[in-house]
Image (cartoon, helix red, strand yellow):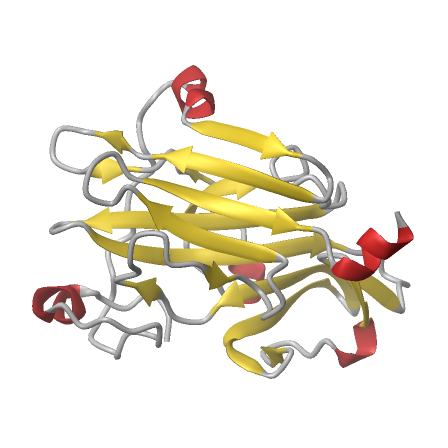
Length: 224
C-alpha cells in the first residue's frame, strides 16, 4: 500500500518498480519554502500541442535537493488519498490536456541520490450526467470506471471516483505504490502504457531535474 516508509529499500539499495513493502508510515515531505517567482523559474515548458516537454528543476536547500512542490491540503481526501504536497500541472504544461484535466506529481531525491516518484495522480472533473469521459485523449464509458479498480487492468494505477451524493464529480487515477531507484534518463509511463505521458529523472548526480513528456494520442495526430 501507499505511504509506507522507504528506509529498508533505500538502505540496501534495492532497485525495483514494484510498490514498497509494508514497513510503516512514510513521512510526508514538506512543501519547499521558496517564493512563487522562484518556483516558476524552476519549471520550463517547450513543444506544442502534439509533443510538449515540461522540465522541473530541484533546488538545493542546505541539506538536500527539493522540487518546487506546494501544499494542497486534503485535495484528494475524497478518494482516500492523504498526500498534501504536489507539483500541479495543467494544459499550460502538457499542451493537449483539457481545461478540466490536471496532473499532480511528487518526485524526491533521497540521500545517496536515490530517486523516488512518491505520487503521480491524474484528475479530471466531470459532469454528473456524462456517460462518456475523455481521459488523456481517449474516450471511456463512465459506467466502466469502477471506484478502487485497476485502470486498464494495470495494478499500479487505481481509479478513484470523487462523488457528491450519487453524482461523480471527479475521476482520479493514482499510482498505488512507488517508483523508486529510477536510473538517470530511465523513462516510465504514467497512467497507462501507451507513451501518452512519460516521466524521467535527469542529471541525478549533479543538478537533478525531472522531465514530463506529453504526447497527444496517435489517433488525434491523424485527425489534425
